[in-house]
Image (cartoon, rainbow, N blue to C red; front, side, top):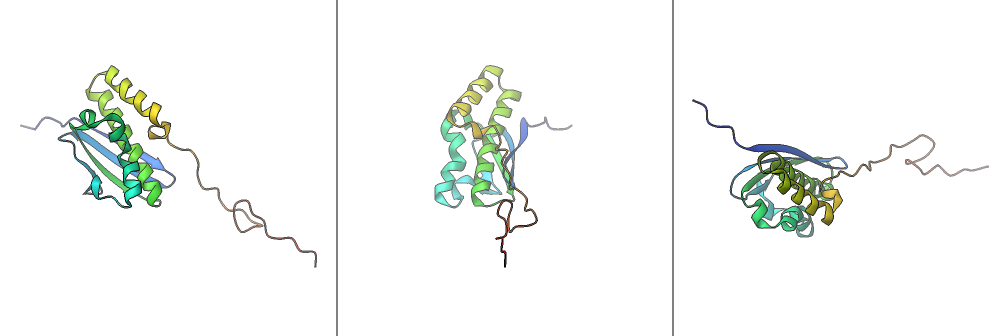
Length: 145
């Protein structure tokens, strides 16, 4: 006999080249990033940025969810923003799938009121370098002699 399937959702959060994959399931309120509790994230100032979705919603709305996040690529700041987006999107997806639609809309509205980038990814990317210069826009200096 097989065990009943766990209530879970898997969501991606992205920022520049950093990608965070969040696996959200029923549990007791644990949030782990690459196997470590979110409280141990470094640096301290960006840790709060990653924890924002939980602070915006309040503990009671996320206390019954376990979220495991794997993050790769990008720099420190981009990874934190990707984690932040992944947490927010996973909570909204879980509410949409396993709780009712009105609760999902309320959670989504709270996130959008606070910061739209929690749910909507930033389309800006690094512009590729072109010939005739040292970067995407800068050109080599012109000399007549």
